[in-house]
Image: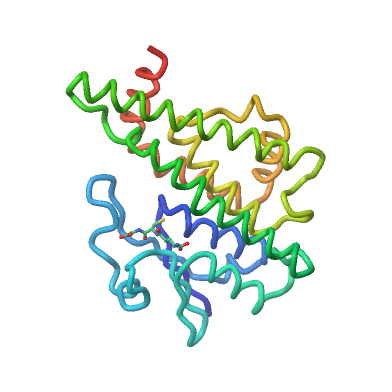
Length: 233
Ligand SMILES: N[C@@H](CCC(=O)N[C@@H](CS)C(=O)NCC(=O)O)C(=O)O
């Protein structure tokens, strides 16, 4: 019996949920959502997560007597333990490239996305602070749009980043979903990337992650709407 400790707004946990779904394991896996709230974050920490992960972070996967943390490591384990519906390409070089794209999504694009994080908080009262925040956000939007153009060119003509569906698509999908929910650049000017995103949304695991995150976001709607107005102004 498998158990996943996940979080409603945990991008990394959703990667694992998507991989489990692709491998036909999601339905039989028990999922527990750890407490999360916009003001205080992941508090109080779930005791099972604290016991399993010195970083106190989700995702944590328990499979029999094995307990693992870190989404990248969990995806690698799932691939080895449950090789049906593979999520890595064949061959050392292709696998390394695929892992590198996942790392790019999780570390590089993710750090750019974090610069938009203030958009899910209410805008500051002070006008000068608001102006500074908007400028920093717009700078991050421009850097992200540049990355989207690179990804679009990399994808052109291909349905997925590494041939068949892989962990690279899963990692990139999640970071791009978070960029969009934080009012980052639209995908429309990048046709290959936009079509890829639509293609992924046709799949159950990706669609569930997007829907559940939209539901979790409803509580944050006033802050996001206020930022959307400021960006348009
Ligand atoms: N590299 C880790 C990152 C995990 C991570 O940042 N988890 C966040 C939620 S998305 C978390 O649990 N944060 C709570 C904290 O850091 O206290 C992974 O890929 O699993």
